[in-house]
Length: 161
Image (cartoon, rainbow, N blue to C red; front, side):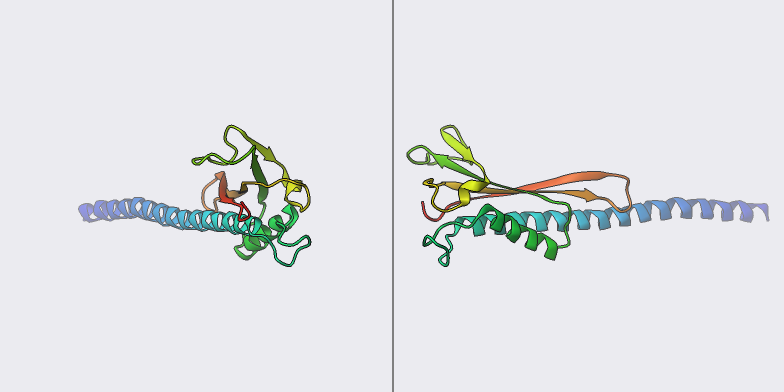
């Protein structure tokens, strides 16, 4: 009879350890899924903003001028709201090259001058070569006491170049 009681105690202890490991694994899978979804929404929002920034707007005056930086940020914000992502920081940057961009250039390489948001406005005399939209958002884990900042960017060449 005493052997049976000892076995019952062992079964309870083994079950407790197994259930803890199982639930930790389950919560880790849920958190990874949430993090991946958030990162994907950030990436898509940055890409959507860059695409919107580089395409000239045919309804603008003067004809076919690029959208304002505030319009690009509004477009990215709309995308983020639809994906339920809050607390983001959106940066819109353009790079202008002296005569022409080198063939294998990243955004703002040597010889390029970064310009700020107000250069997206029409009539400033600049012909930007690339537009970079960077989106950063905090990600708070539900089941674990950690928080990370997720950041992504999209770089596109302007269509009028």
